[in-house]
Image (cartoon, rainbow, N blue to C red; front, side):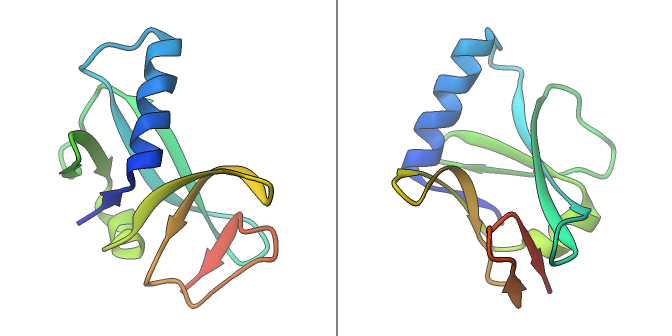
Length: 108
């Protein structure tokens, strides 16, 4: 399962409205190689499902990921921060063994 915080949901709804996206669009989350720790998160709005997609819904938000990424993301929560320590989305990922100093990448 993938989860989303209330703050992340509110910001995603705002971003979709600003981009003029309709209800057919969902958030695609994936894990790709890169960054100081080896793996980084990638997020995009998408409206085309793939045959092996893993589909979750939390708080009315549809979250979609491929099977390989889901192995890294299982039970993670997407959150949003607008505080002094940085603005943006971040994941609380129980599968991560370490992350880099900037918080942009992780390792398992």
